[in-house]
Each structure stands twice: as structure tokens, then as C-alpha cells.
Image (cartoon, rainbow, N blue to C red):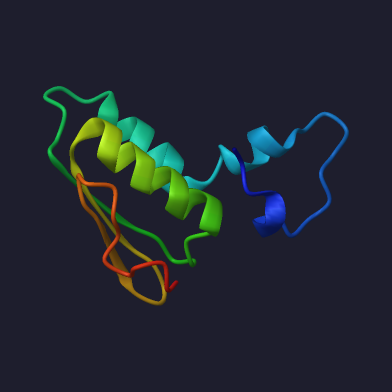
Length: 93
């Protein structure tokens, strides 16, 4: 289920909530990492903006499903998403 509360702009007629949220840079970077061979067990992503709540929840699920460690550094902190589906920030982002 998408969290549309983090969308801060008007959505055009040809756009959907899903298409806007799926275009976030951290989700695209994760997708790129998963098409590499061999699939990495640790993924590191750096971004210059804060991570939104929808991406935070999605990445927790992805780390749990893929059984990998994902590290994302945003402007406020470094998030360590562990293979058990938990984040080091404990929801304080």
C-alpha cells in the first residue's frame, strides 16, 4: 500500500500515485542493483534529500524479502536496513 502523504506536488492527469512514488531515486537505485550479477548482499546508496516514509517502508520490506543489507545515507542520517526488515533509525527519520 502506497503512502501518498509524502507527495508534495499536484499530480498530472496522466500520472498516478504509484507512478510518482515508484520514480523515487532510492527505489530506482535498488532496482539497478538487483539486475546486476551476482546480486550484491550489501547495497549502499547515497542521496542528497531525505528519504520519504513510503520509500522507508518499501526498503524495509525489500531488505527482508531479498535477505540483504541496504545502507542508505540521506541528509539527516544513515539508515541500515537489515535482512530482518528493521532499520537502525527505529522509525525516527
